[in-house]
Length: 179
Image (cartoon, rainbow, N blue to C red; front, side, top):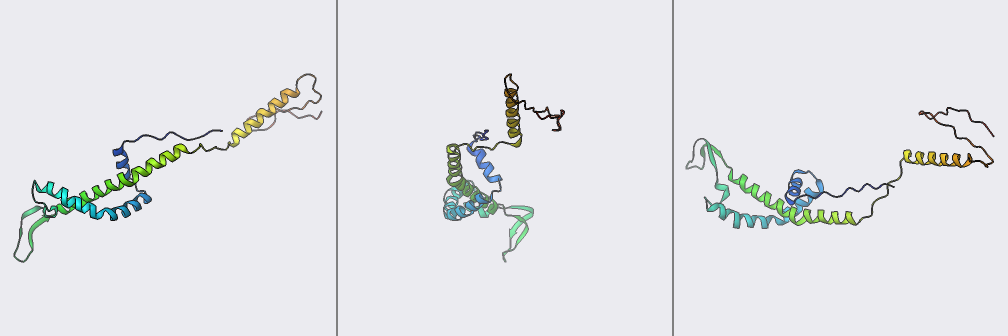
């Protein structure tokens, strides 16, 4: 009876967080969408009330106003059109921060506790009994036959049953005789 329950590996929290972000698990993605939608107002408040003022200490508080010009000077005309090639990286930065905050909240409040719970439940579970393989069963039968043969071959036994030695292919090398 062999049991195959390897001990769980210990991971750091950041390694688990990275694995969560990189893995495409549908259940965790569904949980992330639901919880992310529920936390969207909280995340927006954190970005607007905490992150943007910190960024505002360096420049403007509105991340959406950050941009760069790739070609020529970026000037806004009186009709609202922009000359030059404008690269708006502020909204991308804002969306990235919102995503990271949402992912961290989902991971640390939902996924990490659920994984710890699953590990505790797995540790409490009894090891599953693995059924014997055909080779193990055949080995036991062979050993039982050998034991039976040696018991019958002892002096004083009445019947002489023989178990013929087997070649590798399973074909007997001796003829069996009836006693």
